[in-house]
Length: 170
Image 1: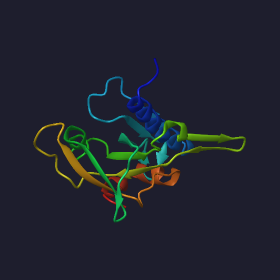
Image 2: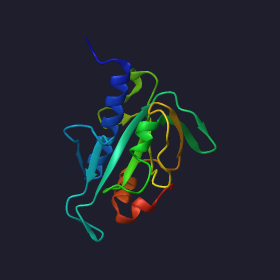
Image 3: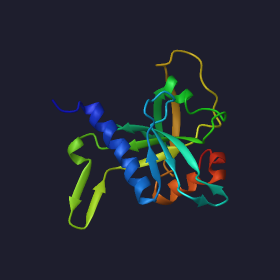
Image 4: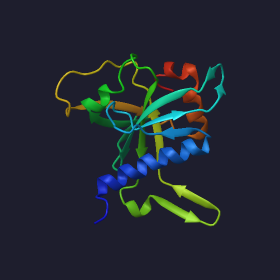
């Protein structure tokens, strides 16, 4: 028995982020138990700017049927997941990473001798400017993730900068 489609999609989304972090020379770690709503802590070994060993927390969501309007991915997430990212009272900056994936898992990756291509892309968003929501934990919360917030090697390094937590949009 293999992975069900949701497990497969989620694993690919998390792996997508790990590949980008690895290419950026960053360290990805996972807590032994997921009790705080973050999938990974991404860290930089040594001094980065004026900070030693900076870290960020990320929550990774994957989406195979994206809706894009007005330059934003129109994502809806569970309130309990949203609340684990909203606000400023965290020890580390937190970011949502939304990975847009193909609808068909056979299209996730293409390999040739000189390149591995992962489809489609990942986008980041800070929710520090939003307040946690009240209501049912499974109620959906609308989140607009800017298409301009493409998660790249350079973008990941930028998010590691101490002032990055102040970057709400782009």
